[in-house]
Image (cartoon, helix red, strand yellow):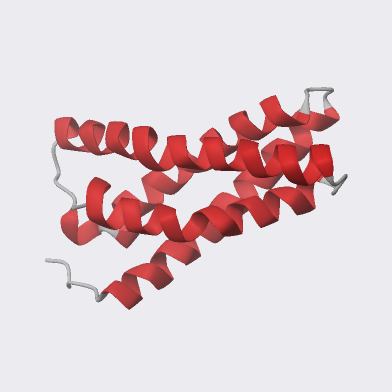
Length: 133
């Protein structure tokens, strides 16, 4: 039996999981760009890596009281998460990276941190109301 969390407690858990996702995203972005990949393609791949990592942790911790145990339910949530939070994250990160790096010359890792921060509130709302309802 899992205890119901308040929205604030869930938001704190979401951010804690998100911090791990940020680490995954930044490491992937740095590794991919260091290998010669264009920063926008590297951003999209790095964001997807973070999205998948975050989903696994949200399933097991942030929204554990709302998750079902069947593989079919988990796969449906993963699909909803990827089509909503994943799509939002990739699109917003690409737009912000293009503006911050492409137009303003900001270093790509710093620009990526700004992009992640700007996406986080919308991602929490979508996760809470759509994915883990």
